[in-house]
Length: 168
Length: 156
Image (cartoon, rainbow over all chains, first blue to last red; front, side, top):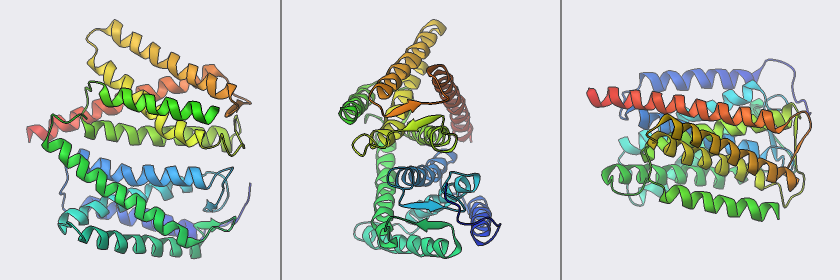
């Protein structure tokens, strides 16, 4: 086990403040989705980030670690939960701004850059520790892919609900 | 051979799920799928990497089997059985589906151990079966909550 930090400092506060602030925003923002729709968009972010973190940052590949140690800890789980509101807001704004056609590409590029900015802040505060030559720019296509996947999922969900005869 | 087996199994399971008559909507199945990936990922990481009760393969050709098994195979098998379970009319049939699910999961896990993808250290197949049963029950509880929330939404 690699230990990067033993004290309660920047990375913990980043996660705690981010976690609380984002969930307060989700709670108080006007609702435009039903409970189940909001839940699925919320879970998408958590599930995808958990998948990547438990694939790219574990044993064989181990390109990065999250928070204070290389082991999986409670704070790592909180960091993943932080992505729930992010994916919720991604689709929230997508629907509110009525993004269509080529605007999808611009929206994805902006949001991927924003995700990279947040990752940079996390890196500086000790939330992420890169290893084995992993560079931050490799995260950009991953964020782009995840967010594209979420948009596709959103459209498939709408299509299936508008056409109940389509196989679920 | 382990990776070829798990990829083939994945494709078969996805086909079965796609053609199966489903009791749940796409939205409900999606929510369950994501919850399942979270449950299985946490379970395998904690038992494998934190507690070291299960050891993961370090073979680069076998290692991709683990995320495929964890994030696709297990969730889809549970979804297939949950949809069948809910559609079943009698309690006897539901119980048979539940036993069938546990048997299938046990069989797949045994095959993965045979191929060396997992190695049990302070773990055994009985504990795996208990965890699979817990997964199933958690998902059943989530289905009940979802149906209640949908009923509340529809009645507004």
